[in-house]
Image 1 (cartoon, rainbow, N blue to C red):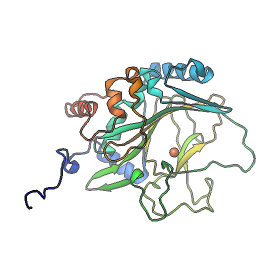
Image 2: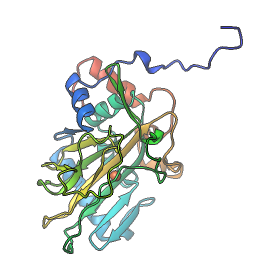
Image 3: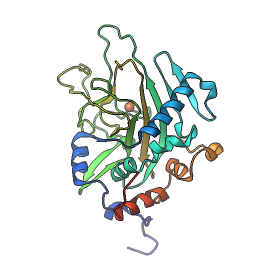
Image 4: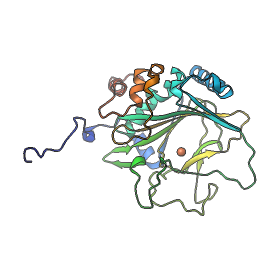
Length: 295
Ligand SMILES: [Fe+2]
């Protein structure tokens, strides 16, 4: 190549990056579009989170700035959760979960949303059915086009999913409740026919029996949604949304610089767009290399 014609290259090319997912995890995620990690947080942590979350939903004026609490008749949302209390960093910065998220996006995750969602049992009129969707940021790409903001690719024994959601449940979830998806649709190139709904044999949506503390990790390219909540206690789930920390910015407001004192330096870095490897990611990779337990 002529002098002066060199391409601009980072020193962190992903080409030789070994995946930190196991072969079984890669196989399963590529096939299904989701993984379930059991018990990623402790009963103590769950209780603390439930206590804070319920309190803020009951008395939104007691929620610390800059939390936004939205209360509806049959549920509510608290966002951006880690600014409420450091305990919630145990969901977004959880090493067990981050190992998988990092393995799906070349070790460069950026958190762009963290929210607690409450969903209560509500009266459902006859014939009303749950809807499924893929996550976009409001711009649906036409048929046959790939949305670069919600992309899924696998090749050479690696997976690149530039957008990953995690859902950590704070309560037990029986089947036919909570998260539902049609496995494998993260790779589907055919649009979901308008004529189908969730209970159709052509749309085999699954639900998952979960215990408080379990984590669902899924590609938001999966056709997914939530089943109506049928239990007497409310559904309480924390969603963390990660994107490849490189080309995309799905949320310009995070990290909240004016409230940076409410989160850790690791959390601030996790929420930041950054080209190079992040410190917490380096630590997790070192722990894995040394065979140490992730927490
Ligand atoms: Fe979604």
